Image: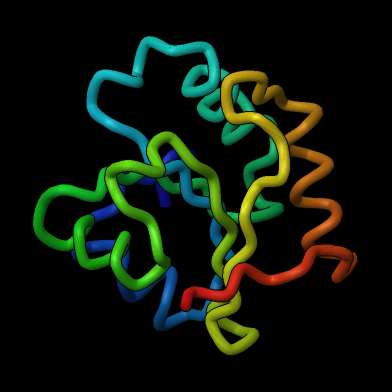
Length: 124
């Protein structure tokens, strides 16, 4: 598995089939130079093994279907969610501002998720 997964059909089975928790950064293509993207990519290297790190858009093909499933639209970008396939596909939204994303805030989000301290995001 790559350290930072660009979501595609190749990764449906490793995430959903193997029921592995994953943290998703939903972003536009223009966001790859932004500080929050760089912080996410750096955290993926440092925190590898704690959770899968995945990036995705929401406008094309399988990425669009993923966005619909998780409840993320283009107007929500950029946003960060944890998906837990082993726990009824519960979804959790990053509580902070994505613009101030850091390795410390990501570590805290993941730690709170693992401790069961996050309230799930409910798609209406």
